[in-house]
Length: 257
Image (cartoon, rainbow, N blue to C red):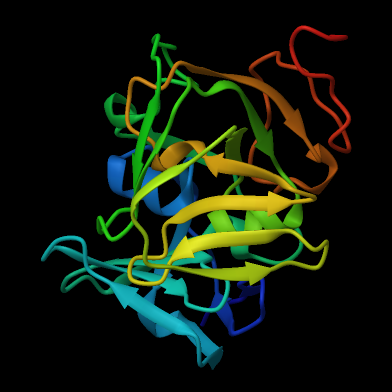
């Protein structure tokens, strides 16, 4: 019988679950589908589906990008929570959705060839093209990404399933828009696709940031700093040498480093 009990939930609490361990080591997936839905990188553990017990699931919605798997997300806050291959006895669970210490580590990185150029090999761009996973939301930002901020706060951890990466947009031209919003505890408004759950934007105090992972290469962006690192998951380390802060007070480029 499983000897471990791990609780998890989305940000708004519409989906709550318990996973009976032991849990599989975490896999970080950089594929285009996970990148778009999570807004950056999706990190997941796994258990037999019979070991996942739902306490609340009123807002749980499933989206199939292909015939090979289903993706579970919360329609209340857009949190990317589950992935299950067709016919598989196991189900993947977002590591960032788990409560408290997990005792896990990232064992593998998958599909790095699909990763965003802003954190692998930056490429020049004059504008940014973006779209959610299902294509119901499409937009253009009339400038390069520039500095991209990685946020490890609890809200971003819960909604992305790992941690978020975003950039400030001076303007956004929407070519198609079919989204929903959720207002978080700090007053920030997160916009996401109601069909596939892909994270799109985050707006607070009049500033709108775009989720970097939903954008197509080349982006003209580069990962610049990590904020709210005190709230990050215990299953990964930040080892890229970029600035880190316990809040969001790191100066942007061109001011004070």
